[in-house]
Image 1 (cartoon, rainbow, N blue to C red):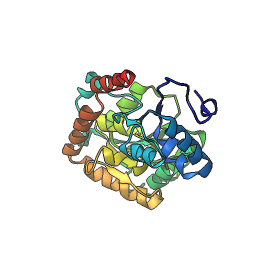
Image 2 (image 1 turned 30 degrees about the horizontal axis):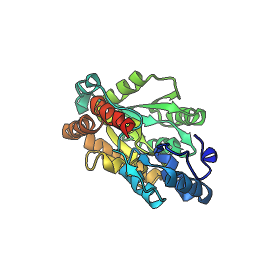
Image 3 (image 1 turned 90 degrees about the vertical axis):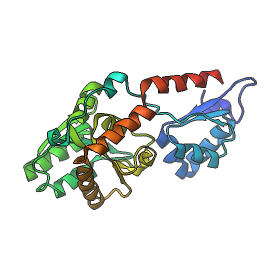
Image 4 (image 1 turned 135 degrees about the horizontal axis):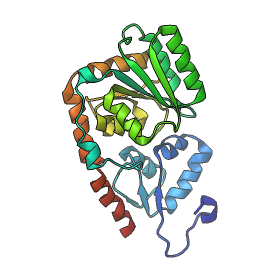
Amino acid sequence: MSLRALSGHKPEGLRFIATNWGSDIFWFQRFPKHRAKLETLLKLADAYSAECHRDVALARELGFMGEALPVIPNAGSFSKADLSMPLLPPDERKTIALKGYHGWVGRAKVSLEAVRGLAEELKEYKFVVYSANRSVINLASKVAKETGLDITAHAKGSLSHQQVLELFAKSKVYVGLSESDGIRASMLEAMAMGAIPVQTSTACCDEWFKDSGVAVREITVQAVKTAIQQGLVLAENPANANENRKTIELKANAEDVRKTALTFYDL
């Protein structure tokens, strides 16, 4: 049902659950016209579902007065089979994975420029850029030629979900940059497969890791260079990958997430 159809009210007897991806509220609430729409929508909602506790608080600020539902990942969760895969030790991880989306809120080009600036100290690694825009693929090719780094870029949709999991399973570090997000599914996948996340803090990463990953709070080349270096240091201690796997087992296992999601329909 559209906001226009609601026109500031809802039909009698209708229970309305509002749900969103993180950018829907975290990003758009800063723009006056969009904020007004969010306020109208949330005041009508009987319940609200979000991926981050941060976004529940934002909904309250925007006038939501209903029931806040349990926070769960909108993008799904991980099976027992996924979470039973042995984690490769650090010395067998020779890859760095980069989320390749650039545009609107994605900032993959900053990741590549940071890699360019670290070329000499990162020459032992292979780099895989996945879910990439055409301009990111072009930049990846340019950086590879200029630095001699081994960089492979895959267009958006060209890798299956299983192939992405396999990428993270052999990666030492995953880098994802975005001006706005909810829970970044790639971040959770990296954590599940043992790659240390280097993720912009906009993805609610503080709700998923503290010292076993790197929260990037400024999207600049220098900040990302430092973050990658920090991530590689963390990756040398297997305890960090193990801690992240345990977090996923606790908060994003398929059985528990499914049970929680089904309770939403009991309202």
